[in-house]
Image (cartoon, rainbow, N blue to C red; front, side, top):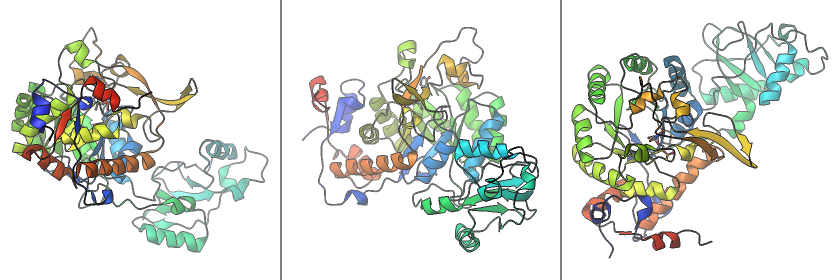
Length: 488
Ligand code: XMP
């Protein structure tokens, strides 16, 4: 019954996610038994196939940390200075569950009103005091509400009220050891210091209760640090960027381009392979055809990013008359790339869980998302209200907005030196999605149910079904598409 993938994806020209559906299989296992482990690159396998887009309204430190905690990976954008991008990567690599590595800090010469400001902004009340007022400086005290709440004059200096006899723990202690110290000392905050007495992180009693385990987390083998990726372009200055990112311990680089089949990408891939081939994996792209894929793989790509003009903020297909419907693009590239041992990341056009499954059944190993993750608490930017709806900004990296922000995102579209700029994206807003802490587990669980309906226990099993013809599909007419949605 139904059709095999090849017919659906190639027989009628290009198709995309709404154009087809998978026929159900046989269920003899629980949804919980489904594994979502999947390959991101030749050498990296993730526990969940989720990747966040390298866009300045999607991936900075908090997104990347949470993507990795829940088994995926974040790709830090490069529409910023080298220092800014490296600092984000550093924060992800330094992240230790339960340890706050960027707490509010004060210097002894701050005043009580500065404490009031921090309290009003963040709700935090126990604030470590260091010599310079910054992290990494010598810890000289801590101020808590009890030190100052009866003092009416808010111009009093912090040094005149702070507690100097501070209970601390040494850097390198485990979370469990730190917990024990907090329990015994009955304090609210535990500063962690290095051998020079300099503040490196902080543990909060309140957080301890909220702490959870992240059994799926994506970590590197040796250091047990979270995995993180970063994007670069193909200019000479990107070699310096790359060097600094590697120094910070980045695991994956994405060469960010809307059309990856170019001499620029060839030189960059070859450069990375010969210089850092052992330490970073290269995701090259974007591509949508077998011919493009063949080139990138022959130059040394460890994974391919597939999609051209399919993103929710893209205008590439309209403006450039170039691209490909996304499901056919993923299918064609994936069926070639797998013969070379290279996994494929479907990038663009994912607007719900169903489309994540549709990309997997087209052959993708991982799914990159922009708009799906842009409205979360962890994405960059502040919430605002419009017509009563809570929103965040979301913009294409080829939008005039992003290209003119000075970060260099125009390079993605070969318009770095152009006198006339041609936008290939738009800027807009997306609705509040809450925290990734709830959203990612939701995506994971729903995806497991989707695979269960297909009778498939794993992504590997899905892929086997594509190529041995046991996974069956049907295309959907316009009427069938509206039947499958809410009717009114
Ligand atoms: P979604 O649909 O997840 O798409 O929001 C995110 C992907 O879109 C690509 N991207 C762009 N494509 N013009 C484009 O043609 C743009 O301005 C633009 N900005 C991002 C990118 O591949 C991203 O992962």
